[in-house]
Image (cartoon, rainbow, N blue to C red):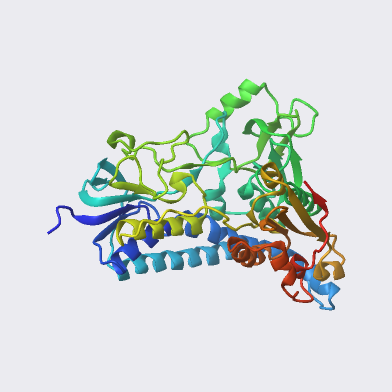
Length: 485
């Protein structure tokens, strides 16, 4: 008989934790417990990938009527019904949460709807007061969006909040330039909101291929998003009806008075009225809502991790080795809480590798190389491997690239452009990176990712017969490099 209540106790009911729990229980026969203090499914299912992608779908219908008219259909544009969509969205998320609960139940996992903290190398304390022991503990608590450290930051919302809005704002300021900021800029713009975006850097989507992110930024502006780079938010406060200055968007009173007025608000709720904002460029304006998309931090606060010897990084992330093991041998961590590659499929893969290593006796390091990913901007960006900039810092490369107007939207008279790009090693001829900016780029990059993961060369791409007429055929018909570096 085991000396512990459980062979494995998982803290966190997101995609990675649930996968590890049910595979360990269902396939290996381990006795597994899992605690989740919020909704099962985690960030991806409840407040991230899934509801965001459904909102992307909703926002893209804004162009359908106009395009259909160009193709001979007699359709009329109607208003977007946010309350109706939000209800359907909520129903779908409820359904998916129940699916996750059923998967755990069907695998024999004991679940606890409670917050868990680590009170010893083999002990978990629940918010109910119960204590559970486990031979192995797996922390899979994910991350959370953060607001900047500035007065009145509570007036703005974060990405978790956007799915629960009572009504759509007429105007929205988005602060940030990462994929979450850019995705919601496209979504809200498509749903009829007047969107302004501030990003402090020189170009949005830092870390991605320069040419690809440049086309995304250009397309966002063409679609009506008021994108400002080299710009950040400096001050914010509730807007006042009193205007002592004739300037557009100015508020009466000094900056300190505005701050004091904001601090009189009760609680930490986001503002329910216009918000006055001043930027680092000196511009002032009012917005119905401000969305901070300025980063995410791991969920490790007040979990007792450091007290039992688990090493945390600068942002609170759990430091792990290649097998997801922490500095305490009995405690492991996977997913966003480790701040390695913060993508849902990566968390799932890490969870599977953990089970292989700990419960199946097959040491399996996590492979974080050549992970394809998609950014659901409008147009989408799909990417795998190295950007041109990173590749040419490593070795001589050839760059094959084409940009053109796709047939479907060109016929409808739209100015949209797409980009197809391959970065190729001059020495080995292997494709080091593939970058696509186009409708459906996420679907295309998944297939390209298989080839590149297998080590495909440029000549392998060249030998592949094109599928015509498609946008993606350009990936196998580019014969002459645009440049070498």
